[in-house]
Length: 88
Image (cartoon, rainbow, N blue to C red; front, side):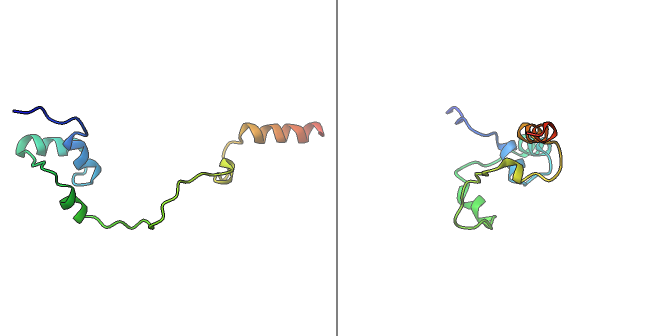
């Protein structure tokens, strides 16, 4: 027998891939019935359709406060408010 390859546990993968509602349910099914893992990437890819645009760009916000609506002010915001209160 060969040692299993290190990587993601099959119950975690099945849960992340949304085959099971909970990871414990995935673990229970795998321990009860077993699971065939023999390079299933093409089979798994056939189950999904990529809806993301072809050009994927990393999101690099220039101003993190621009995404916020309401909520707590940042340190920079508080300093600006303090400067207004002190008149300078």
